[in-house]
Image (cartoon, rainbow, N blue to C red):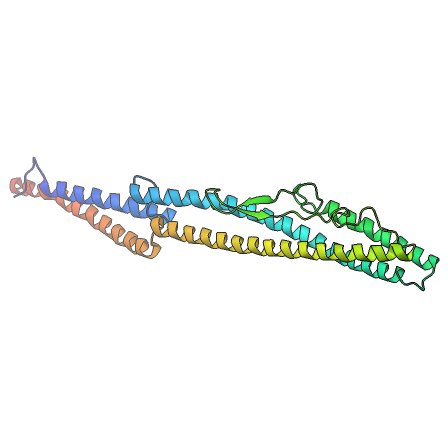
Length: 274
């Protein structure tokens, strides 16, 4: 016979209902946020590991930005360098034609005028190959540019400078094609300049490829870190959804159970009814 002073069944039902409510709240939070570990309170060890990985991801974002900047500087420099190489090739053509012993002064003068115009174009390309304030073709410095390669900034990737100015190419002072001797000397200088430009472009191309490869590596590493963090803290939405439905049913049943337990003491009243 139930007691009117202590309803043990109701107390047990209430405890079960509270426990189910706590589990339901936890599951609802996981479903709404998509996380099984939202903070240190949920799982201190896992949360700490995940936070460290998130810090590395942020650091690699800075590395990626640095490498993207390196790629842009290299691309601008290579584009300008290729134009300069084409112009130097044209210089060689003009110098070869002007070195023809059978040519006239008027012809050599015309070639010389074109030659000088091409030289000015080369100077302009070298001076204006700038991205984000950096120009690695203007001969203003011999120090290589350095860019981040890892998350703790202990490693860098270098981008060497090239001097594609007229002085750097050995074309300053400008050769004079108005005489056969001058044109012949110009041809020698231009041939050497073409070798310098093409060697510099080859070096720039190799460095740009290395930067691109490292950028891809960093991108994949960031993806792996993101997946790793997800494995640690993300909730299994399929399981959580199924669990949520089960807990909702359990909560409804616990409410009914508590209601039944609370009605039990009313049975004592039937003993006093006529």
